[in-house]
Length: 477
Figure 1 (spheres, helix red, strand yellow):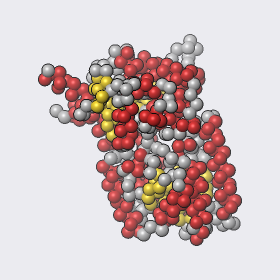
Figure 2: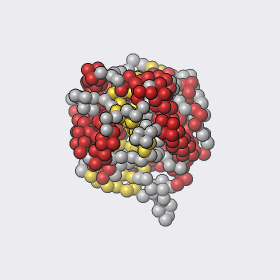
Figure 3: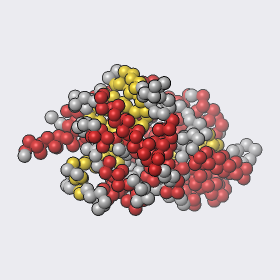
Figure 4: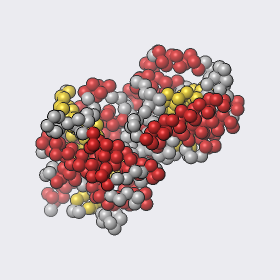
């Protein structure tokens, strides 16, 4: 029996920082939510994580909110405000996030935050263990929960545990900045399977764990550490291509899409969609767009750029500074280039519903996706999936995004090269139809090969196979 067939009979327990609610699950269309939900719906199981509340009950006890939806139980746990501040805003997002994105100037390390990070992971493990069944397989997601496997092991959990990192994994020379790097690396070695988006991330991980301070060794098909086998591999996350294409087509009659189309007239349309985060390179992107208008004055009045950047981590100073900077840069660009009947840049600091967003992506002549570092960047894949194959737009993509490893037929640019991005925009806007169609077709083939179903099935199969290998070796011995 194959690993895939065997896995159907075993529950999956997915663990992430936040747990979706059943209503959110019904509306999920991209990224982690779709992949996790698909696996849970197929195998049955639990989705466990923080429920979003920052208040324990009157006795200081934690509540577990449990909602059943079909074959899935959604289990949410409370945190208090101090835990959240240290674990999430502190160590996770002021240390690990900038560190893993190579943005060392944003790191704000406090030992107390690291201790809160450990406590919350221990709390997750303590409340998760009673919910586990012997044949479960556990799938942990992202940098917030790196120590979870070691905490579960301390409590006697012997189930297969896998970890998927949704952000980049930096080189060891970058990791050396972190005082707790040895702990983090050893904690990752407590998993049976560790997954990354790209071969570059995988190579960085292997190099890091084989440093003398860690002491892991590379075997033919696994990493050996402390008497354990760790399978590390590449599992590029994808999107639900057909669903996004359908959304994009159906949304063409939506009011927001219709108004946008009417406002454009004969102008070409550039779109950017990003969370408001310093890793997304928005300030560099705005400067590159201004440079494009300088270098190619014939584009003035004939091109409109809309940047959608919903806020994230509200109240964190670094993000407030980015928002103010982008507002000022938008004003400066429009003040310099706008005319009475043309606004070159529209900056929207709020989110849109997924269907409407897919409709806007389909309208665009250019998708501008230029993070200064990204694990994957699913917006790049969503833009390609949303296009009309008969008249597709062109993706301008940062070579520092994980998606660039797969989408080689995008116009690849270095986000730090202002002139290079400006030239990339011009190339995309002037690309002949035949070339656009050829590039789009090639990228769609990649999207279908590495879609969201392939991502989840490959990971689950690898996690189950990691323990089947143990069983087979034990039988042979």
